[in-house]
Image 1 (cartoon, helix red, strand yellow):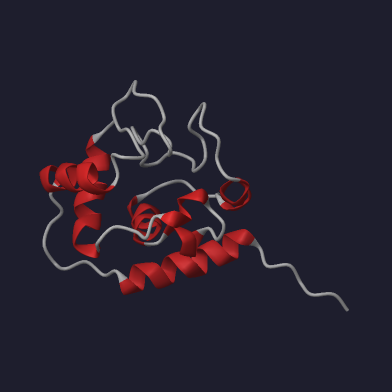
Image 2 (cartoon, one colour):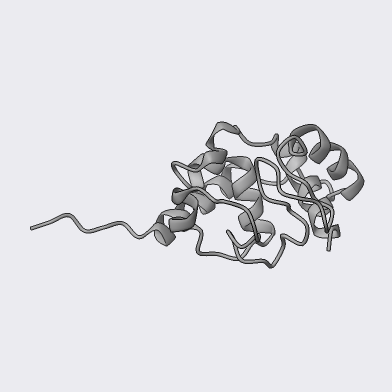
Length: 132
């Protein structure tokens, strides 16, 4: 009898749920202006967000919400991300990702990033949501 393979989608769903439970909102409303500042501090080294900017170490994040994961043209995603990313980005999946990318996709090249502070995550998502 062989071991049953674990489906990446099931691992992702369980991990996302756990990360979201750990990173509950602090109760204040999200602020896109604060999110822009937090994005600049914590994300802009590796990601661009304007419509026609090129990719950096990470893909351009313009219009990320409601977009299929792993679909930015011209960006070379890691094998781990390609084989696991079977979702569309929404506020919940994006929050889980930025709180702990290596937990969602073990082996991702973004695994060197430890995640943003929970207090900044909702603001960053609000900022990204405004970039469309």
